[in-house]
Amino acid sequence: MCHTSDDARPSKPVSGVQLCNALNRADLPTLLGTPTEYAMNASGNESMGTWADGTKTVTPEAEVQLSTYSVKLSTSDDDIPVAEMAGFLGSSAQNRTIGGHPAVLYSDRTIALNFNLGGGKVDTGPGGIARSLLVAKDTKDGGGFYEVSIWRQDDVVPDDLALLRVAETVLPTVPDWTAG
Image (cartoon, one colour):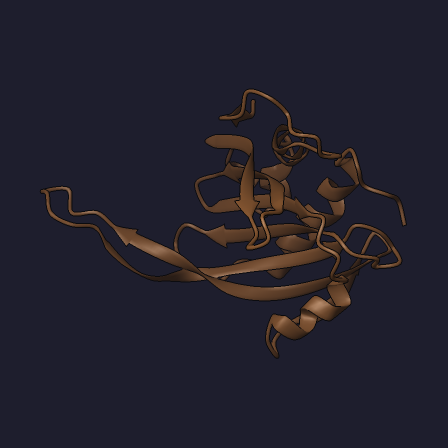
Protein backbone atom coordinates (compact mmCIF):
# COMPACT_ATOMS: atom_id res chain seq x y z
CA MET A 1 0.00 0.00 0.00
CA CYS A 2 1.26 3.46 -0.90
CA HIS A 3 1.27 6.22 1.69
CA THR A 4 0.86 9.84 0.69
CA SER A 5 1.09 13.16 2.43
CA ASP A 6 -1.13 14.85 -0.15
CA ASP A 7 -4.87 15.27 0.33
CA ALA A 8 -5.71 16.35 -3.21
CA ARG A 9 -4.33 15.36 -6.57
CA PRO A 10 -2.90 18.29 -8.55
CA SER A 11 -3.88 18.77 -12.19
CA LYS A 12 -1.20 16.53 -13.70
CA PRO A 13 -1.55 13.60 -16.06
CA VAL A 14 -0.23 11.31 -13.31
CA SER A 15 -0.02 11.67 -9.52
CA GLY A 16 2.61 10.56 -7.04
CA VAL A 17 0.20 7.94 -5.71
CA GLN A 18 -0.29 6.54 -9.24
CA LEU A 19 3.50 6.37 -9.67
CA CYS A 20 3.74 4.62 -6.31
CA ASN A 21 1.07 2.09 -7.28
CA ALA A 22 2.99 1.35 -10.51
CA LEU A 23 6.30 1.00 -8.64
CA ASN A 24 5.13 -0.88 -5.54
CA ARG A 25 4.65 -4.22 -7.29
CA ALA A 26 4.79 -7.71 -5.86
CA ASP A 27 7.62 -8.58 -8.27
CA LEU A 28 9.77 -5.49 -7.50
CA PRO A 29 12.16 -7.46 -5.23
CA THR A 30 12.65 -10.04 -8.01
CA LEU A 31 13.27 -7.30 -10.59
CA LEU A 32 15.94 -5.91 -8.25
CA GLY A 33 17.57 -9.34 -7.83
CA THR A 34 16.53 -9.62 -4.14
CA PRO A 35 13.51 -11.96 -4.39
CA THR A 36 13.28 -12.74 -0.66
CA GLU A 37 12.85 -9.07 0.32
CA TYR A 38 9.64 -7.05 0.51
CA ALA A 39 8.67 -3.38 0.45
CA MET A 40 9.15 -1.93 3.92
CA ASN A 41 7.84 1.51 2.94
CA ALA A 42 6.10 2.88 -0.16
CA SER A 43 5.03 6.48 -0.66
CA GLY A 44 3.93 8.84 -3.37
CA ASN A 45 3.62 12.61 -3.37
CA GLU A 46 3.88 15.76 -5.44
CA SER A 47 6.55 18.35 -4.72
CA MET A 48 5.98 21.95 -5.72
CA GLY A 49 8.71 24.25 -6.97
CA THR A 50 8.56 27.92 -7.97
CA TRP A 51 10.82 29.36 -10.69
CA ALA A 52 12.27 32.89 -10.58
CA ASP A 53 9.49 34.12 -12.90
CA GLY A 54 6.81 32.84 -10.50
CA THR A 55 5.91 29.76 -12.54
CA LYS A 56 5.01 26.82 -10.31
CA THR A 57 6.04 23.29 -11.23
CA VAL A 58 4.56 20.15 -9.73
CA THR A 59 6.74 17.02 -9.73
CA PRO A 60 4.99 13.72 -8.94
CA GLU A 61 7.29 11.13 -7.36
CA ALA A 62 7.19 7.78 -5.62
CA GLU A 63 9.68 5.84 -3.52
CA VAL A 64 9.74 2.22 -2.39
CA GLN A 65 12.27 1.02 0.21
CA LEU A 66 13.43 -2.57 0.66
CA SER A 67 16.20 -3.89 2.91
CA THR A 68 18.84 -3.73 0.19
CA TYR A 69 17.50 -1.20 -2.32
CA SER A 70 15.52 2.00 -2.51
CA VAL A 71 13.78 2.83 -5.79
CA LYS A 72 12.44 6.21 -6.84
CA LEU A 73 10.20 7.04 -9.81
CA SER A 74 9.37 10.59 -10.83
CA THR A 75 8.15 12.45 -13.87
CA SER A 76 8.78 15.91 -15.27
CA ASP A 77 7.20 17.93 -18.05
CA ASP A 78 10.39 19.83 -18.96
CA ASP A 79 10.66 20.99 -22.56
CA ILE A 80 14.24 19.67 -22.81
CA PRO A 81 14.62 16.42 -24.78
CA VAL A 82 16.41 13.56 -23.01
CA ALA A 83 19.04 13.52 -25.78
CA GLU A 84 20.03 17.10 -24.83
CA MET A 85 20.02 16.30 -21.11
CA ALA A 86 22.70 13.66 -21.68
CA GLY A 87 25.22 16.49 -22.17
CA PHE A 88 24.48 17.82 -18.65
CA LEU A 89 24.92 14.43 -16.97
CA GLY A 90 28.65 13.99 -17.51
CA SER A 91 30.89 11.90 -19.70
CA SER A 92 29.81 8.61 -18.13
CA ALA A 93 26.16 9.05 -19.27
CA GLN A 94 25.12 6.26 -21.65
CA ASN A 95 22.36 6.46 -24.26
CA ARG A 96 19.77 3.67 -24.09
CA THR A 97 16.29 2.85 -25.37
CA ILE A 98 13.48 1.71 -23.07
CA GLY A 99 10.25 0.54 -24.70
CA GLY A 100 11.09 2.48 -27.86
CA HIS A 101 11.72 5.69 -25.89
CA PRO A 102 15.15 7.40 -25.87
CA ALA A 103 16.84 7.12 -22.47
CA VAL A 104 20.06 8.07 -20.67
CA LEU A 105 21.70 6.00 -17.91
CA TYR A 106 23.86 7.93 -15.42
CA SER A 107 25.30 7.91 -11.89
CA ASP A 108 24.93 10.31 -9.01
CA ARG A 109 25.97 10.32 -5.36
CA THR A 110 23.63 9.97 -2.44
CA ILE A 111 24.11 11.84 0.84
CA ALA A 112 24.99 9.94 4.01
CA LEU A 113 23.51 11.02 7.34
CA ASN A 114 25.13 9.74 10.52
CA PHE A 115 23.20 10.09 13.77
CA ASN A 116 24.89 10.01 17.16
CA LEU A 117 22.37 8.01 19.19
CA GLY A 118 23.94 9.26 22.41
CA GLY A 119 23.06 12.84 21.50
CA GLY A 120 24.90 15.47 19.58
CA LYS A 121 24.79 16.65 16.03
CA VAL A 122 24.09 14.83 12.79
CA ASP A 123 27.05 14.40 10.44
CA THR A 124 26.59 14.46 6.68
CA GLY A 125 28.89 13.36 3.93
CA PRO A 126 29.03 11.60 0.61
CA GLY A 127 26.96 8.43 0.48
CA GLY A 128 26.84 5.63 -2.03
CA ILE A 129 26.19 5.67 -5.75
CA ALA A 130 22.70 5.97 -7.22
CA ARG A 131 22.12 4.74 -10.76
CA SER A 132 19.41 6.60 -12.64
CA LEU A 133 17.68 6.35 -15.96
CA LEU A 134 15.99 9.30 -17.69
CA VAL A 135 13.40 8.03 -20.18
CA ALA A 136 11.68 10.34 -22.68
CA LYS A 137 7.91 10.60 -22.28
CA ASP A 138 7.41 9.90 -25.97
CA THR A 139 9.28 8.02 -28.67
CA LYS A 140 10.09 11.26 -30.53
CA ASP A 141 11.82 12.77 -27.44
CA GLY A 142 9.73 15.93 -27.60
CA GLY A 143 10.40 16.93 -23.99
CA GLY A 144 9.40 15.58 -20.62
CA PHE A 145 10.77 12.46 -19.00
CA TYR A 146 10.42 9.79 -16.36
CA GLU A 147 13.32 9.18 -14.00
CA VAL A 148 13.90 5.82 -12.34
CA SER A 149 16.66 5.72 -9.70
CA ILE A 150 17.97 2.92 -7.51
CA TRP A 151 20.52 2.93 -4.71
CA ARG A 152 21.64 0.40 -2.17
CA GLN A 153 21.52 0.79 1.60
CA ASP A 154 25.02 -0.75 1.92
CA ASP A 155 26.75 1.73 -0.43
CA VAL A 156 27.54 -0.98 -3.01
CA VAL A 157 27.08 0.25 -6.60
CA PRO A 158 23.61 -0.83 -7.81
CA ASP A 159 23.16 -3.36 -10.59
CA ASP A 160 22.42 -1.64 -13.93
CA LEU A 161 20.51 -4.70 -15.14
CA ALA A 162 18.23 -4.41 -12.10
CA LEU A 163 17.56 -0.75 -12.94
CA LEU A 164 16.81 -1.60 -16.57
CA ARG A 165 14.46 -4.46 -15.55
CA VAL A 166 12.57 -2.12 -13.21
CA ALA A 167 12.23 0.59 -15.89
CA GLU A 168 11.18 -1.82 -18.65
CA THR A 169 8.56 -3.46 -16.40
CA VAL A 170 7.22 -0.50 -14.41
CA LEU A 171 7.07 2.36 -16.95
CA PRO A 172 4.51 0.68 -19.27
CA THR A 173 2.16 0.47 -16.24
CA VAL A 174 2.27 4.23 -15.53
CA PRO A 175 -1.09 5.76 -16.59
CA ASP A 176 0.36 8.38 -19.00
CA TRP A 177 2.96 6.08 -20.66
CA THR A 178 2.73 5.89 -24.44
CA ALA A 179 3.76 2.62 -26.06
CA GLY A 180 6.72 2.76 -28.44
